[in-house]
Amino acid sequence: MTMARPTARVVDMNDTTSEEILLDETVFGASTPRHLLHAVITMQLANRRQGTASTKTRSDVRGGGRKPWKQKGTGRARAGTRRSPLWRGGGTVFGPKPRRYGYLVPRRVRAAALRGGLSSKVQGGRLVILEDLSLERPGTKRFRDLLARLGVIGRVLIVTDRVERDGAVARSCRNLRDVTLIPAEGLNVYDLLRHDTLIMTRGALSLVEEAWKL
Image 1 (cartoon, rainbow, N blue to C red):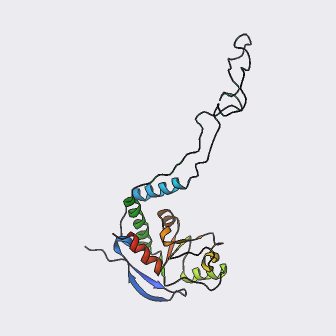
Image 2: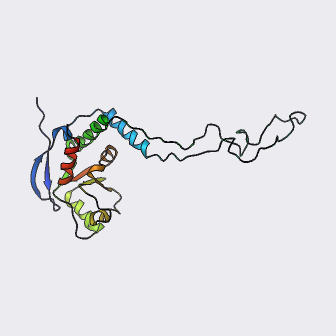
Image 3: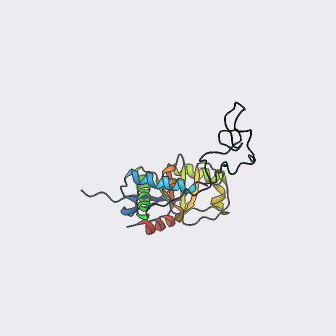
């Protein structure tokens, strides 16, 4: 039994359907094991860690140049330095030091996970293809009304073929907490699964299919 090729309708900014198109089945009709998605998301989160945590060991703590008291005769435990981890203000044992947490998984794994994330949006009916996305002037309320016309709810990921940092679209959705705008080359598994709805322009769709098809 052959699976039906995935399709999507192309709409304009007034939610008027212009046509229904066929999607690349290797990109939007893939079945990806969950452990691959987990592996890629874990990698992305690890790569985002700053790794700047730093603690002082006993060699970094100031002071402790002389023995606090003599070895015998005081009735107290032996002590050689005030920098001991046993003392308040002393060094830390095996504390974190600046390091890199990032690593890479094979590109085939990353590609399979991305295809799986895109396919899940199609299967769940949460993919919207826009003919074009442009605004004459920025306006947060105007952009929120656009999303309402498209009928999207929850967190929204918008992928375009180009993103101008000071463009009208970027400035319009900048203050919307549940909206993320990224270029097609920045598409990633973490953002795909973190958002409820995926909106792609037709230009971005072509770039994604060309980059990730088998």
